[in-house]
Image (cartoon, protein in one colour):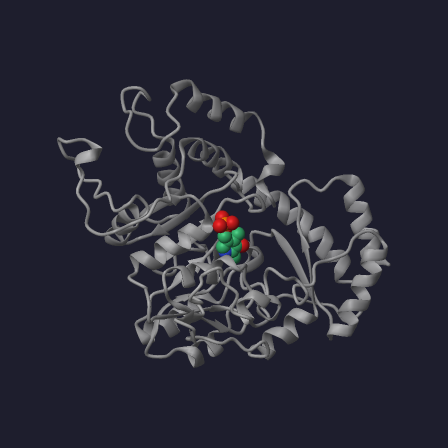
Length: 395
Ligand SMILES: *Cc1c(COP(=O)(O)O)cnc(C)c1O
C-alpha cells in the first residue's frame, strides 16, 4: 500500500474519458455521456469482485460507515460496539448518527476480541463494527456467532483490507454490510472515496437513497426534480472521476496484493531473526492483503529498544501504542470530550455528560499494542529501501 504507487496511464486515460463527455456527475445527463455511468460501473465491478450482491459508492470510508449505520436504523439512544484499535473515523461515524461508541479489546489478531465483545453487549447495542485492521482479518466468523446469538447487525469496517479474505470469502461480506475507504493511504485509492457492500437489496436501496438527500431513485416522468422521498438523507455522492479511477485501481488490486505479499515475506523473514520476536496472529495467510507487517516483542521495553535500533538505522517501525490516531488511550479529544458544539454534543446534552471514557479501560489492548511494532509494506520496494530495512532488522 498505498495504491497511488501504481497510478499510471490507465488512471489518466479513464479520467480524460470522463472529461471528454463534460459530465463529472454520477446521475443524469444520459445522452451527453452516451449512457456511460462510471460510478455505477465501479459499484457493479466492486460487488462482483467481492462476490456480493450490491455496492453503494460514497465520498469516503467515514461516509460509508455513516450511511451503513443510518440504513441499519442506528440513532440516538443506541450503543455501537467497535474496537479500541482503529482509526478515529470508525467512532466518529457512530457519534455522527447520534449513537454512543463502546470500545472492545483487541487480541493478538490486533482486531476485536470476540470474548470481550460479548461482555460489552447491552440491551442498547444496536450494531457491532469489527475492523479488519492493517490488511488482515478479524475473527469475523466468531464475531458473527456472538452477534447472531444476540440478533445484532454487524458492519465490517474493511477500510484497510480491500481484497482481503478469510477462508476464501471476501472481508466485508460476512456481516450485514462491509465498508471500504479509497483515501490517500489505502490499498486502492480514488483520491477520496468509499464503498458499502451488502447482499441485502432492501438495505442497499435504503443506503442509495440516504446518500442522496433521500431521492427515491424510482423512474418517474418528472425527471430528477420529480422524484419522491422516503425519508431524510444527506449528500455523500461520489463523482464520476472517482468512479473511473476506482475501476482502474480495482483492476490492479490483486496484483498489488501479490507484490505486497512478496515484500512482506522478505521483511518477515528478517524480523523473525530478532530474539524473542513473535508475529501478529494471521487467521488466514492466503487471505492476508499483506499491507502491513506486525511483529511483537516480549514487552514494551524490549519493543522500544528494538525500535530504537531500527530508527538509528533508518528503518523505524510504528508503535501503535504511541500513535495518536489509531489507539484509544491516545485519543485525548475523546477522553476529554472535546467538541465544537456549544451544548457539548455528542459527549453531553445541555451541559450534562451522557458518556465518559476511561483511558485505562482497555488493559489487554494496551499490553498488546505497547509491544507491537508495525511496518507498512510497500507495493514497490526499491533496492535501496529494501536493503536499509533488511540491514536494520539484521542489526
Ligand atoms: C481510512 C479509514 C477509515 C476512513 O476512511 P476515509 O475514506 O478516510 O474517510 C475508516 N476506518 C478505518 C479503519 C480506516 O483506516
